[in-house]
Length: 385
Image (cartoon, rainbow, N blue to C red; front, top):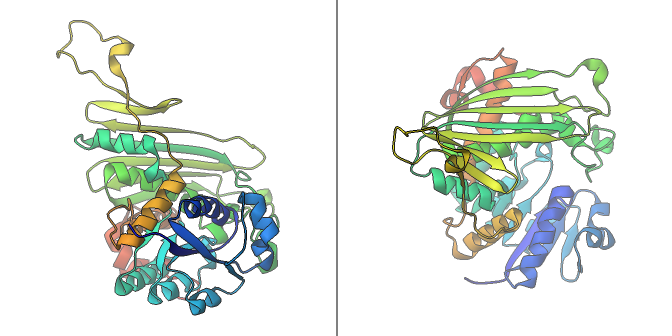
């Protein structure tokens, strides 16, 4: 593989800085050169600030600009990580694709399906490599589960994620300057995040997809936040219940909450196939099933039923995602990617359809119709669509 892919980052907030740390490691290994950093707010580009988050950071040879257009005009990047809040997209992905720049776009790629489909078309027409930041697909625990289930019929997947409304640390985007939350925690705002299901639940739903296959329908009900319980623009619902239908015939349950003044998070993950189930325990995923003579002479002991899945050596999932992206760019082969932009559209459509289902009283939304049906056209368009 060729080395030294020139790569830039658009958005030096919390997520962009995480990418920067991983890319700095890849640069030390000779796989990439970080050549451009862009952020609408110049204070996020200050070398002393970046150095607080990225050990050993030096700005030498790096274009740092508040104007995204400068990055494209400079022709200084072969690839770009796009890590801006989802409601701040304004054609950057499309412009980069048309300029021949390969793309890693953070999720959710957009809050509007039509906008995301425009991105998808531009990427396909330009023939650039493009992936989405679904790093959980690279976690060795999740990989082990996928390999174990490869020859089994999965029938149900359940993801429960309970968190505090304030659980996202304060962001770096000065949202208070552009009509957003006063405390900068934009993930708590429906206008900025598109709901917790869209902003965060897309991770869990995409992981279910990696085990169960594509989504065909969703049905959802949310519990809206009381008007007198909204602080600093944090108006996302209290709780979410999303039921998911997969092409494989499996069903999924995505249950989420974001409670204010709680400051505690926990969760649960379970997978069922036709003859057993998988639980995610402290040491990793464990499959529970009986594989002795059937029917057994006596009730199997717990030890007979418990089968910890073998794990590969642990890796940083984000770093693994970036390594796969860099390899794909270097070889112009998307085989190393576990999710391309095009394949990720199913995950985005599913979480956006969950919002629509709630807004339409719990209606079951079939994704084929959601993508093109006239009655959903208004839901697909952005505010200027």
